[in-house]
Image 1 (cartoon, rainbow, N blue to C red):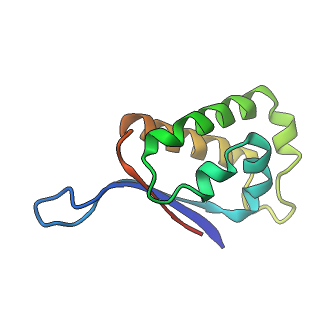
Image 2: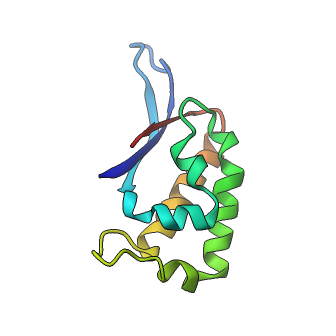
Length: 110
């Protein structure tokens, strides 16, 4: 099972279809890391919100993860699906997209 999160502009094209900015997927095994970093709600509870509303939580989570990597490495799942080494760049990529497209809408599938 995994978290799918994407940013899009509804009906942004002339054909009336949604224009997706970014579409990311990552394992639910990282949930303990997201909770510790303080971005769980931003990732899982942000359906239909603008990207600008989750950027502060993502930015703080990236900061926390960089300041104390050992705390997050300790949460690496024993089954090997997902790790700090996967989580941080994934979160940074989402943050960059949110900042580049602050009025894009957040989609979440869990």
